[in-house]
Image (cartoon, rainbow, N blue to C red; front, side):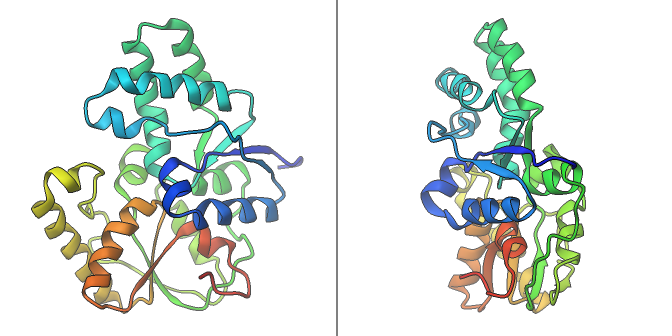
Length: 250
């Protein structure tokens, strides 16, 4: 990039409420890479929770809100493959269901500007070495939406491999779902816990100190299992590791 891109941070509602460290790290990282980052205060939920549980009509106003808040920006970046997947895949469907052709056109234009964090850094900024330092043994879990909906591929790993001091180890059966799946974990708790236990076992097999992923929802699920097992493995969002320099993120 020859000029500093103007970026809107879509923090996502669950990060804003429960894991604000991830959007804060995203801002620090993008500003370090030369971006001008703004946080539109009118932003709210993308509507994924409603859509996934069958409340498409209730989700439609959130699609309109997202377009109204973010359509004027050059780029929109979110530290969540899940929410970006919802915007790209579900928003067009919700606009069609609402029968609003004007909204359909606006969604199509706006969705093209929305990027998951690793996509934006690698594809738009053209960077893999972000100047991070994190001297710990780390393993990476590719979340389902980032892997299967967004097809981020190895972008997060390419970024992690350039982090100074890191000992990055492969996660066995990495592409298997962790079992969270939003309301799936509530409606199918036994299955969800069993899947989470499998994932936690694979994490422990790596000997990693830290489990990293691009979605805090999945990290909360796996981290909950690891915590109950007293494994000593902590979880961090990808943004927190990439934003780290000399100081270890809390």
